[in-house]
Length: 256
Length: 259
Image (cartoon, each protein chain N blue to C red):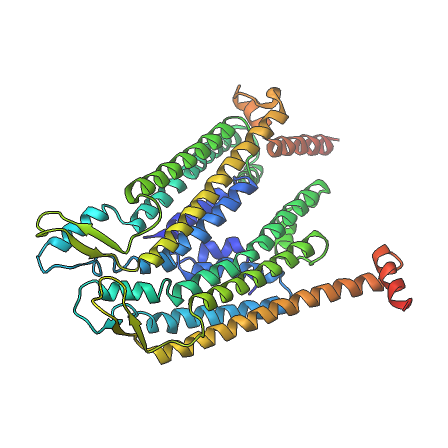
């Protein structure tokens, strides 16, 4: 998806700020990711965002309207719903998607900063023609040096946010299975009333699916970290004559 | 709510901001506007329909809802976001004004048409340094942003007595026959989002303060001599480094072609 952030903002914006614009901003980062990073982004958008918007939101659409308690006492429905569903699954997943995608912005900012420095250098060395600056904009940035560290940190934050949300999910809704019937006795319910959840099986299916995809995303991020570290290490080893770190690693490996 | 238009306007301003300003814009749109649109609006969607009072008296629910929720959280946040986003437009207007002046300068100067076109193109693409009058406009916009954010956060706190939404409120407005119990819909989820939006607001305020401190520090280290006042059209144009460089190149080329 070779599009820069600026152009996407101008041309692909819909009248409402919605997931499409969010997608546009995040996919701008895609060009500077590794292959695994692009796979992660596709998994994120196809299996999580799309499923959330197209399917899950309609499954959870009537969660409150059809949460029925076996009582005519006004207010009992509301209170029991609030007791058993402090925060809806849909909102948790939306927040998770937003938080998990935000470290990518760190990388985008670093790339923009590097480009700015490159532009300055080009201008100073007399290559400041608009054509050459355009070319610079389209060039893919190599993940080396400080950008490598920013990228690794962004990956670690992604793993951290995903795990934090999965843990939060487990704490709020232990067991991952959606119950059909809950028993509630909060005020103003007159006694212990039966309350029935709407579409529990369908919700269980989607919950398991979203959690599985979250797990896959965590694995992809960990694989990407390992890949980047391995690549950097092998580059150092290959250039061990130039790099003191490479020489040190080679020496340690061959001394055992 | 047409956030898309606001987004387009603000990304245009983004080019003339400092790096902290760019981070502020991202935090604003990702953690505030998109959370508001994607999540918060659905949580508050049934706030009046599901506000239930333990009475059959007609009108009691309406009156009690209006008493406890004079202005909905979602509307307060929308207003806050709109007000907090408008000071950068001040900066955009000033930049447009400066550009217009520079353009006039280029058109008045007696050069060939092709050179004029080139100068105008580079003028459009050039990023203005934050010095002189632009510095003051930018600093004023930061102060206004801070002011608006603080006022809205205070308003939210004052109207709702904090961030926590109760499950049950007791109401005795006319026409309710006595003190009735009224139940708020989804109070826990609303509290979570209120805390989240308050935290994001706080983060934006911290970024604004940091940006202001950075601008002041930059101006202080630059020294009073370079914080110039507009003297005349020629001096004014010459202070712009890019334009100065172009004029230099031109004189060099003119002198080389005459040799």
